[in-house]
Amino acid sequence: MDTLSGRRVLIVEDEPMVAWMLHDMLANFGCVVVGSADRLEEGQAMIQELAIDAVALDLNLRGQMSYPLADMLVARAIPFVFTTGYPRTRLLEAYRAYPYLLKPYHRSAMREALLALFTPTAKAA
Amino acid sequence: MQIQQFKSRARKVAEAEIEGFRKNLGPFVIAAESTRMPMVFTDAKTVGNPILFANESLLSLLGVGREEVIGQNFGSLIAGGLDSEMRAQVETAFSDSSDTSSDISYRRGDGAVVWAATFFGAVRNKKGELEQHFISLLDLTSHKAKEERLRLLLDELNHRTQNTLATVQSIAVQTLRGAADDAVVEVFEGRILALSRAHNLLGRDSWEDVSLRDVIGQVLQPFGLDDPRVDRFSVEGEDVRLEPKAALTLAMVLHELVTNAAKYGALSSAESGTIEIAWKIDPGPLGHQMRFRWQESGGPPVQPSGRKGFGSRLIEGALAHELNGEVCLSFGLAGLVCQIEMPIPLGLI
Image 1 (tube, rainbow over the protein chains, first blue to last red):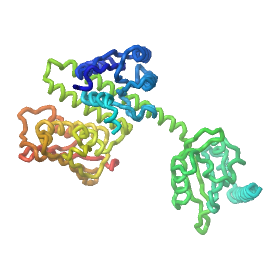
Image 2: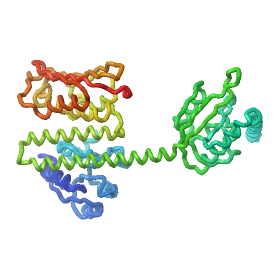
Image 3: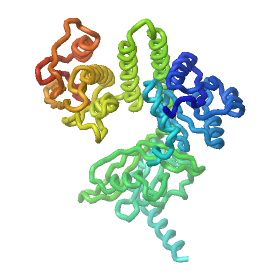
Image 4: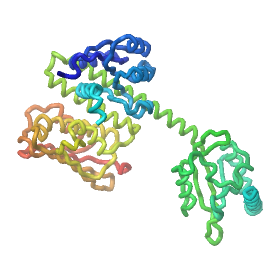
């Protein structure tokens, strides 16, 4: 069985059209999109309230950096991948080694990134 | 207190030297005192290059009193650790017999850092022996801050470009789905992504020139360029810097070539087929000429399709029109060969 099917994924993305495309991609992988947040507070509420397996996390949400959300996810041990138009070097140093996709990305890159989130042993090897 | 005594002796020597200075160079010392350019003279005959003279402008730039710097080694003014790269630069500047200049950061009296373009000139006596160094500074602090602001702005601009391309990708995928062949959507998406990767490369280098090898790497990586399991590419040639426009065009051209190879050419069969990429730079009086060759082999025999698609249009048109280059595409039994000749501006070699 595909390790992505049935995974509950949260989208954090402030560009609606990009969020829609990501929604379609995830649905296509068999993931369940549990929510789509385009603001920091909304993301915080969703992370607190929803059962989430993974998050696609945009870095800049209407001018606010999403690091508070990343901190919450780390604290809750929920894996996530940054999806951003910023180069990796612009990430806070503490997050520079985290999974990262430069926007725009191909769906195969998102698929691989998600698969890597769910196979931590393979990632460490 | 031995050290104290030693210091005060050094200080006395320094003060005597300055007196000598004033006597010998009278009007020059007054000029140096009153100029707005920060200036320092150091003693080249004493280890550590202690400071003999510092003008008002330097004292105010560094926010220190004269007595705090006279007799001190020049190196004590520099910010950063003892083994910093900057210290090495200063060492070199002092030991070098010719005049040199480098950007140095200094520690102000209040702890702040000041950047200054620093010019080191050797002062020799009649016998040609090195006596002193004359050092003048040009405050770059506001210039450096502007540079930093500019870099942040560029980052924002690049961020927006990438986001806009992501939106275009989304619009295309959603508009075309159902209306066009999946393969068409895939080709379109591939081109947007190639453009985005090229932009990203340029953004990383602040939209200045970029390396041809980086362009090749960026485009071919998804096709297994650096993957040790994929032994299908060879890349040979001395690296050359490309202007942003040339880099963008070449990236798009390479993308068309490699996707074509994956569909119909040397990368279309799982087992065999290779691509050789090689280039040479021929110097010329008005600029250099790059001869670039993309040669596929081991794939199925290829022939030109009757219809001129976007790919061949881009390859032949963009290079010719935008880069003032020449392109020759030949289809043979061995595989496709694309030869490109384009000028490389002189400044970039």
